[in-house]
Length: 176
Image 1 (tube, rainbow, N blue to C red):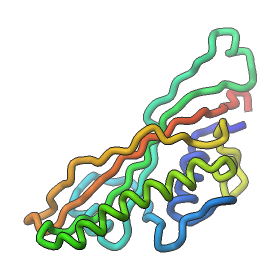
Image 2 (image 1 turned 90 degrees about the horizontal axis):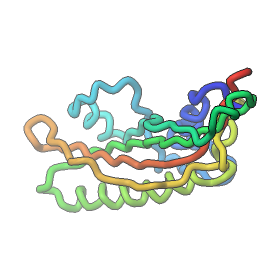
Image 3 (image 1 turned 135 degrees about the horizontal axis):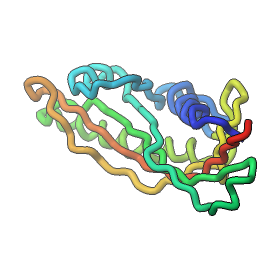
Image 4 (image 1 turned 45 degrees about the vertical axis):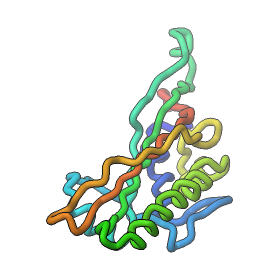
């Protein structure tokens, strides 16, 4: 039983950045760089994404389906949405082969990251053996959508973002 959502988010990064996983794993060439404390500056993101696609994860919605009597239990169950945002360097449209290659990678990455994040055994515990609190025991993909490509600098480069939304249940121990 988890006492924080931090372990679940850390496990998502272990899977997508480090290539951890008990059943399905991302190959080294398919992994992401972790985006930390982004200011959202497109130039910085674009420069970093040019080297390796970036990823960040956050919980955006948290709700409970239980009533007042459940407050006496030692387990509290929540439904949540976790957003996995992926950032890619998208070259100039004058190089259509490069742009096409990026869009193929984006689609393939969705399928690969879904396979890793939605496999029942991959999210249960962190590498340090911390309980993630995941119930179900995996994420379920709700949708993936492209964010509007952003021009960077003089427009020779662009930044492409995708937002993948997953849903799952989370078990929290308020008495631990």
